Image 1 (spheres, rainbow, N blue to C red):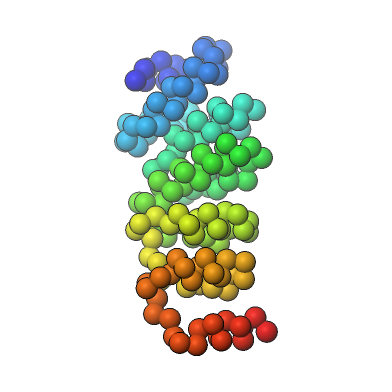
Image 2 (tube, helix red, strand yellow):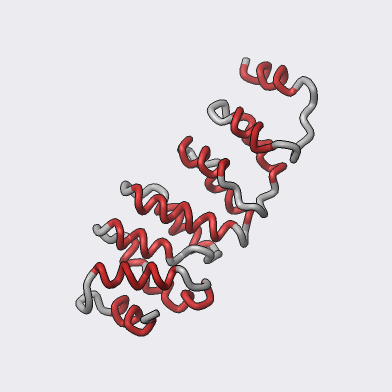
Length: 168
């Protein structure tokens, strides 16, 4: 890993190419968060780069990081117009939610159905499954929620009747 070279490239945009930055960012993002930590403060200008692959590589560096500033940036990235950036943010959020599983609620209760559905399908192993019960009110994802709940929440015999009644 050329960490000193990456440090210099992040501090001075006039040095190196975007491709070189992307390559080094992706290599660095594979390292433990403790080794990436010093670089996180230099990423913000890259997160809004017009080069979507560069922005995605920068967002990937946040994977596994926790704390309000990280979550704020990653949630903003989920609204990015480029799918490659949204994908990088989703994966980074997944890695970070392994350490703070309740933060996965940001995705499970997203205003976008596609994000909710994907988040439901890929809950972190440490996420408390019983909390999915609150998603039964989501008409668009109810069957997926019931499937995800499995045996985590005991289902009364008449749950489907209750849900139908709630719809009316």
